[in-house]
Structures are given as structure tokens and as C-alpha cells.
Image 1 (cartoon, one colour):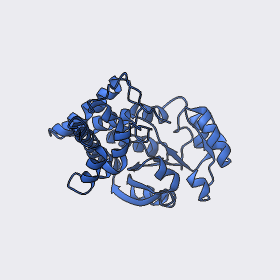
Image 2 (spheres, rainbow, N blue to C red):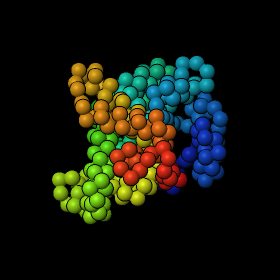
Image 3 (cartoon, rainbow, N blue to C red):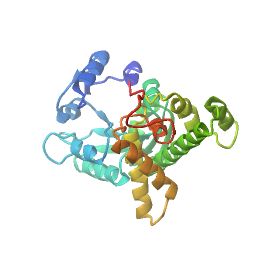
Image 4 (tube, rainbow, N blue to C red):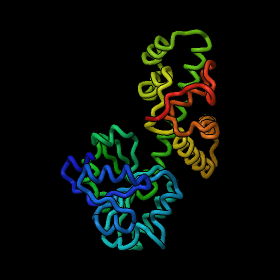
Length: 285
């Protein structure tokens, strides 16, 4: 929607949630299609956002319906947070098909995408980045070229790892505050003015207190992204106990059926007055 308002022509829209994609197509004058190959055929630049490694491999498959069909001279801008090596593979697949591919990792959420204020970290060949620059600048308030394919995805994994640790830590601090009978509004104000301050406190603190877990970044995605970071640590022969503990919290949310809540929902595991499986929780809108 933001690119449409900035004057970019949106050629086609594809999503497995067909009704939502059709609504966006109507709003932008685009065509809603049901085949990946039709997206590639109709556009010069294709933006992808998928959930995980498997989905990425599916849309860039070597056979069947795939974005790689007729991909010569196309540019793929891949925004998903996935394992860095998969971004490297996708660049290789795209180049073999005569196309360019970059990763444009987003350290922001829905509101920022809608208003063109994303923080974007880009990996891939420099010339492909320069080719995508006009579109990326329209989408972002801050744009940073990190390096070769996979490098931006590594940085994004670390961003989300630290964010997830902060979120889980904040939930524990507020949960202990409730157990001690402290006023949580007061406690958040003290946190904000001391060394406990963080961006997560600004975005998630009130939501944790008020049990408003409308989804901007889901607990399931937090679990997946924490897993990417801990796997990178394993490859580097490095032990990260805080990251592993945070990952376990988000994995617990998924196991409890709470993976569709925002990551702020991790507070449901730490507040003594709450029972994550049985009590009423504000679900994603």
C-alpha cells in the first residue's frame, strides 16, 4: 500500500491468504494471481516475505510453480527473517536463472512498513543493491548495506536475539513486580528512567501489564528467530545461555498454543496471577 501511494506500479499480488491478497490488489489496482510464475512474469521487481526456511525454498523451487520460472533479468527483494545460508542459496538460484536477488531484512513491523519508515539491512551483490535502492529508500527511514548475501540475515538474527532476550527479561521483571505487590505502572516508569530502560519497554511494557497481545511480531516467529541465532552460535562453538533461555520461553508459548500472540505474550508465562492456557487473553486482532 505504501509503495502504491508513492507512485510505484504494483503489478500483481500473491499470498496463500487469498482473500487478503485480493483486497490489497483491489486497493492498489494490481492483479491478484494464484501462481508464483505469474508474479515473476508480470513484474520487474518481486518482493517476498515468508515465514521460514521451508517456505522460502518452496517459492524458489527448481521445478513446479516457482518464482524462478521466467526469472531472467528480474530482481528479487527478499525480506523474510530466515537462516542466512538460505539467503545465500536463493541468490545462487536466482543468478543461475539470470536474475538478481538481495535480502532486505526488516528490523521494524507492520506500522513502519505501512508508512515507509522501516529499518532495512541489505545483503547481496552491491550492484543488485544499487538496482533496488530507489524502492528500498521509499520503504525505509534508514537503509544500511551490510555486505554479501547472508550477512544482513546474520545481523537481523542478532537483532532479534537481543530483542527477544530483552522481552523475556522485561516479562520476568514485571512478573516479579506483580508477585511483590508493586504498582506496575510505577514500576514501568522507574524502569524507563534507569538502566532497565529499553526499546522493548516502550513497545511491550504496557501490553504486558494490560494483557494486550495483538500481534505485531508473533511468539512463534520469536521462537523461530531465536532458534536461528542459537544455531549460528552452535556453528561458532559459542554458548549463549540467555539466548537459549529466551528461546525456550517462546518455544513454551508455541507448545501451549500461544504462538499466535505477540511476543509480549511471554508475560503470560511469568505473571503469577495468570494461567496461560485457561485465562482470557487479548488475542490478535
